[in-house]
Length: 227
Image (cartoon, rainbow, N blue to C red; front, top):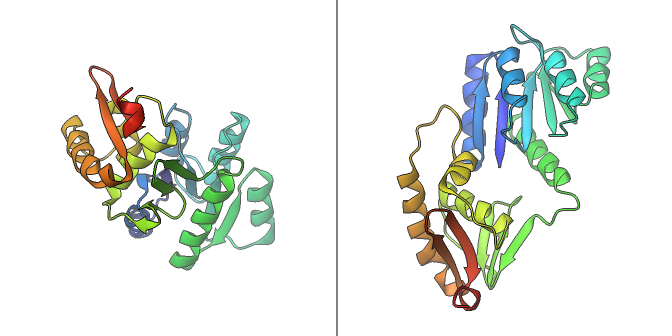
């Protein structure tokens, strides 16, 4: 799961980024509206956007308007110090999915993030399964025969990528995009480490991660992998 946070208040931005990362999301943070507009105009998919209204260079309403005009339906939570009814109505009319006035409760924001991601997955099963292994992408946990599997945040995100398209080959670059924000240093060697750890942890479920030389990784039931 990948989130974009656009907030020019440095203290608030740092706190939001830290909170979302601790919840297991890959997070990109920008400090002005033009930077948000540029990133959202690209090909990188996001599962949710947290968007401040009063940003320099381009306000949040303008960013949201451009986003919806491009027919991008990523869920958006508007954050603003403006609590006037007309501002709330304007944000919702432009296509915001939720609206929070500052100051706000961080636990409430986190709950709204989970709710919007869950809503965005309507019609898409948020629980993936392969053999005895299941992964709840909203609840952020993996289980073998109902027993919670102890995984780090990075391991869980790698597993989620592979289980979201069982039978598909994921390159290292595709997995890296799901794990790291633009500002984070990352190497393909890190993916090899996570894959090595995951193989040991999911083996009891009768599931394996195969390396397809020159292409990437694919997740299979052990019986399928041998065919």
